[in-house]
Length: 227
Image (cartoon, rainbow, N blue to C red):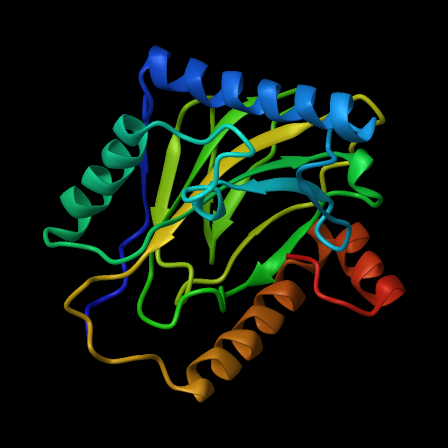
């Protein structure tokens, strides 16, 4: 079983052309949503519990209805993973998320470990555009993110979170999130790994409860996950 990634920050992740490509695709998806459904987010998913609206680019690879990432950008992301992992990686999940009150509730990211990967994950999140700063933590380590900076970590093993941010109606925070695991990894994580991750995340939420008052209140109010 591979070791989890030691968290680190990588600046200037996307080129100017790649950055433009991402937003051009998003604008076209939103335009199509307005034209077809009278809702610019109509072809995106509103995750109210989390306070964001997302498009899962990895789900668009084999369809022609909506714009999708170019092969060049997909290949760049794969190459980045393999540069960090130092060996081939498996299926790559790619998502864009916009944290906004348009999602239906306040944006929040309580401490959690990801359950979306079956093996030790390689994960990075890139800050794209924003109306306000929003710190990102991997366990106790705080990252002062800036546009086009990526944070690398193992989402399956390291509890990650953001403090309360107090979004107004016009505020937004855009991220790009990608995750994979090694092609050679033949050791799926046992179920108790995820249960232990949940317990560790509860401990981080308690430890940093002063920074998470609104997020914890929201979790209690909606009786559901907020990550």
